[in-house]
Length: 244
Image 1 (tube, rainbow, N blue to C red):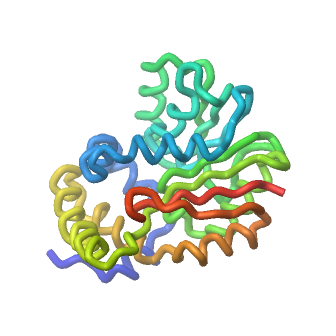
Image 2: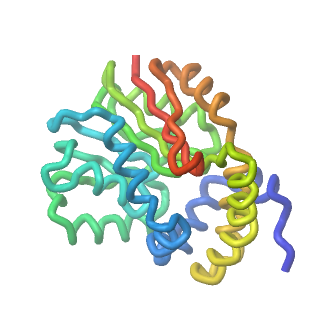
């Protein structure tokens, strides 16, 4: 069955549509992350945590927490954050996240809330750091989400965002784009048994702003010290910024 055009795959999805899609793929989400990233997703999360420059006593928000992999990296035993709050709009993702937290050694330091990144259910200036791991492209109003992140961050608090990019070197870029647009949706569909979720992934990445444009968006949202670090040949971008 032919897939809808990429623009339609992205533009026509409401927040409720997105939540339902992630509910449906939640059970195989972690397996596919490991498989499709070749295990590099763990390295990317470690680098995001390091970029927050935490000292050990902070409270950190993990937006679009999914199954809580980044949250657990933040709250690992003797980890950098004293307390982490994860927020997501998918009930099934949060259910799996809760199971993982309660099976870990950090459950006392981590909490979960169902919520929308565009309307974060936390008080102004209530966290010292914030992360978004591969979720900002799924937010309809990115500026609203970034402004909300700045609102809940204390002055000087850092934001770290992981998002997909594309390699700069032409030969590597060509191979990667073939994999990302052709092979990844096929493997994702076979493993997740969901017809469109992994066709949506390359479509959503293709619709996401280029690094310079997204850095400009962060500055417009009121962040300073904005930078983009390209990881694994540019496959992933780590955006970091400080709340003013």
